[in-house]
Image (tube, rainbow, N blue to C red; front, top):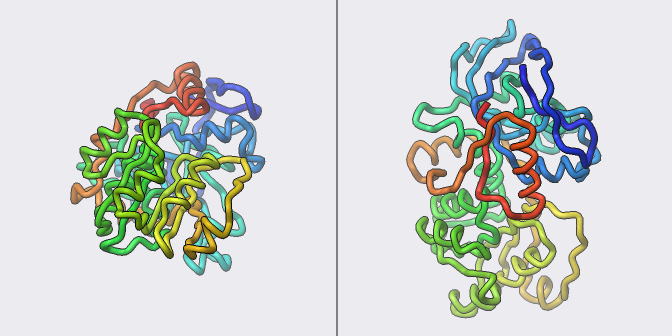
Length: 342
């Protein structure tokens, strides 16, 4: 099969031809029909993950068709449409038993510690293959495996309750899903904060109140729009210290800011005025849960989650094209999402 591989941290991906990995008894081989290019992949390529297993085929947003079954797999069939849960867990350790499989003591991430979807085929545990309903495209199914799933998990971590208000900082791939999911979970108002006018137009079309951070002070504007109160939940989907601080400063009393975007930098903040005084929380959100993917499929089938408005681009499984997309992600100049279509 054709694949793209990261040979060393900080270097471009290279094209290779390698054998398809045969499935173990409880595995499936999936013919990749779409593989999303995520900011996490760019972060990994640049050396942002010391746990990456090199050489590595990246790609954790995957959708495709079952091509081969392990001998013990009974609940899937060749030809089934599936998308892939990228957290491979043991199911038996203390964290897995408590429903926290992303902290599994033998955690592996598809596309980081084991081969991912930047290839024509990928071999994964059968339990990681989630059925993809027919109305949902492979492209949207792939993006849902990270962008949408991470957005849902972040909202759950923020304990969003019906009738509360939400500010989404960063209207990229995660942001488009976060806006719709927040509304589906009963948010009274959703504010979309970004510097890209095109992205804000899309956010407004989805029912969010746009806040152009390039034109106004985002915190001041969000407070103006909430009669000085601030929002109950804010999501930092950007991953920059200044944005994390804004997400905290935009909160109402007892609000929850959820940090999702990845960055290596320290954050300096006035602790009393920002955190202690209003008794707000800074909450981390890491990966998502297999159980949340079934909930996502319900939202998608009902139309409550529609990735159609997002500007999802497509590239071939070709090293130059994929490296250029990763470069644009490194420079924070990418569109909502780009997907490899082998």
